[in-house]
Every structure is written in structure tokens, then in C-alpha cells.
Length: 163
Length: 328
Image (cartoon, rainbow over all chains, first blue to last red; front, side):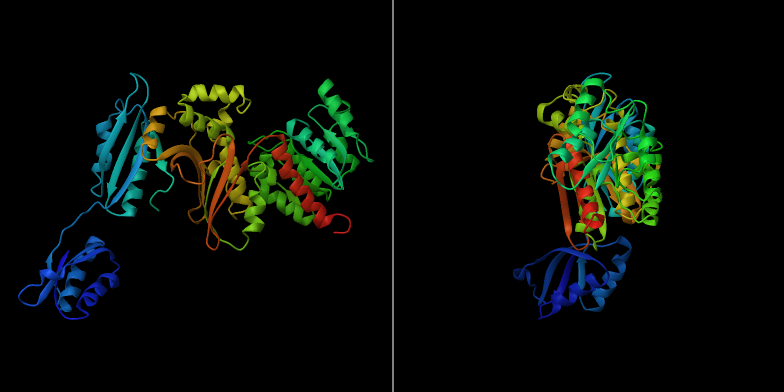
């Protein structure tokens, strides 16, 4: 989000405090002094992770401190995880396998890299999932595991999975 | 102290040789295999017993057996090294119960009785004031049981991950390094004596799962059975899957996992970064634990074979001698 602050000492710190108070995780802060506008304010870009339902509370808290929110950009699917699948992936309806994840609303298949060595041989694929939160990712992996067990597909999870 | 060895295959013979070669204060007074037994309360002539076993396939007199050794009472420590029966733990379980009930220490490399009845056996040992040693049941020579229960005592173990089956690790190492297919790598493992004629027990992940049950119940304070373990084997791993992992700087290994906080125990092939300490080559075993005080600790070593197993048994025997032997 892009914030507009008064160009006086302590303003930036004051604007960041509500973010941590509310449980947000600040990833980067970009603060360029040369963008100071005529009204003696400055604009700051803050990238942060925050549960979506808390966003309105944060905006209200920032406004109370005299800090204007100029723009908010949202990337919903912050979590990413790759797994390997082995089995008859095409013949067990790959479209359905992908749909079962995409239909959740909180996770999507973002990449699929498949190798098919020979007809009637099992194929192998790297599947990359994206999800809104770590909990959603666990849920998505659980769904994929259920689908795989129904279709006799082997799922190889990474050792360091999202906890 | 007087030692009776029940089971006289590769491990039993390796132990007998190791004990005969070293003067550590142990005398072998009895041995038994599945068809015969030998007893001498003053100590058996081990080279003679080994020669007889090699020549005739019997270690002693076919007229006597394990029950005669138990009845003789001619031992302070019973070492049970017969083959594992994962379903019931028998007949070793009954032999161990009898010895503990007689007030004799027991040391075993047999996974069956420890996986099936650890809590019962431990209670029986405590009632009789004797020790039950089982270091050799998990990861051969690697001192993971004493490492976790003594070396890291006081820590809370948050997670345990391990390479606990040398056969599977050998197959997956060869598939990655040489591009062998699963059937080729399995055949090679058989030719080298790393895999049984019927490899099901290893490649389906059952052997690794039994070791997890032992670790969970004995050193992680859990109470699980083999049925509680989610098990997936390595028999459908493809070379293409290994290549896909390799492209990410990772490989595939059969990993046993215990998450005590979630009461979760599972064995499955996992994608693991190549620079992870658990990526060990060939038939090696490795166990990594994450502890609240110590952080990450990894144990690596030989997980099978007569001498590595004898090493773990000797460690238990020495512990018993130091704790209970004359002058202790």
C-alpha cells in the first residue's frame, strides 16, 4: 500500500506501529524523499502480509494517526509450494485433478510440468500450488492427497512443507 | 557377566565373535538357533560353536532349545537377536518376557517385541529391577536411542526425520547417481545382498515404519502402533520424478517423520534439498531431530550388518555391566 505522511520527524514510525499492532508482517518499506509534494507530505510504499479481514481496521487506525492511504494493491495468493506427482495423470482426468484445487477459492494450480516417457507408462509431473495463507496451503495439499489416493497417484511432498 | 545369545544368524555370530575377541568381562554361557542350542555354565568355546554352525548349520544339540536355556538360568543377560516378526513379535516376545520375569537383563536387536509391546516389557523390567536394552533395533550402529534419551535428555523434541531403511536409500541413491530404473536398482541391491528375495518389507516402507513406532514409543513418550503410521513405499518412484526434483536442487528419499505435537507418524518418499544433512549415500542411515534447546542434531552411520548391529548390542551390554555388574 502507498501511504501519504506529513514530512515531520516520527511520522513514519507512527504509521508503521498500527501495522505490527494488528498482527501484520512488514516485508519492505520504500521511502523516497525526493517525492515530497508541495503540501509538505511524503509518500511511502509499504509491502506487508495481513489477513484480508483486518485491512479495514488497519486503514481506520492509520487515518486516526493522520496518515492517508493513497493506494492499496492486493496479491491474494502469497503461499507457494511445489510437489511431484507420479501415476497415470492424463488417464485419471488431469483437468479434474487441477479443478479440485482451483474450485476451492483459496488455492490454485499455478504451474504444471509433466513428463510422459512412453504410452502406458506412468507419467511424472511437478505441480505448483499457490494459496492465500499457510493454513489454506495445508488444506490444498490435503485435498490433492485425497484426489491422488482416489486416482492411485503417488504424491511426493517436500520435506520442508509449510507448517 | 554371563550372556545367553538367542538367534545365531549373521548378527548372533558377529556378536559372539566380537565378544570372544574382546576381554570386556562377558562370558557366553548359552547360544540357540531355531533348531538347536548349547549350554555351558562355565562358558562355551566360541570358536568351536562357530565352526560347528558353519559345518552343520546347527550351533549346538538339536535335542535342546531356548526353553532349556531359560530353565537353566545360566545367564545374567539374555541377548535376543532372532529375526523380526512385525505382526506379533513372537516367539521372541515370549522369550524376552520369561527372561525379564526371571529377573534377567535383556538386550535385543529384534524390532518385533519392542514395536509390539515396549510399554509392557519396560514395566516388567522395572518390576524386576533389570534393564531392557534395544539400541540395536533402530539404525544399527547409530546410537540414536541413547543419543535421544540420554545425550539430549531435558530437550523437548519437536520433530524427528530419518532415513531408516538402508535398502531404500541404496535404491534411490543408485537411481539418482546412475540413472538406473527402479527394477534395475532393486536387482542390483539384491545381487549385493542389501535386499531380501522378497523386498516388500523394505521397499513398501514397513521396516522404516516399525523403527518409527519404536522411536515414538521409547524415546518420544508416545503410544502408537504400526497401524497408526501412514506408510507409502518407494516402488513407484520414476526416473522422471527424480529429474524433476533434481531441477530444483533436490532429490527423493524415503523419510520417516514423527511430529509428537501433532501425534503424527508417517513414512513416505519426500522431495528433499540435496544439501540437507539427511541426504546420505548408499545404505547409510541418518536421523535428524529438532529440539527446543539443542536446535537441530543429526546422527549418521551404518544402519545394518552383523558388526554395526553387534556394536549397538555391545553398547547396551557395557551399560548393563557398568550399572549392575560386580563392583558397579
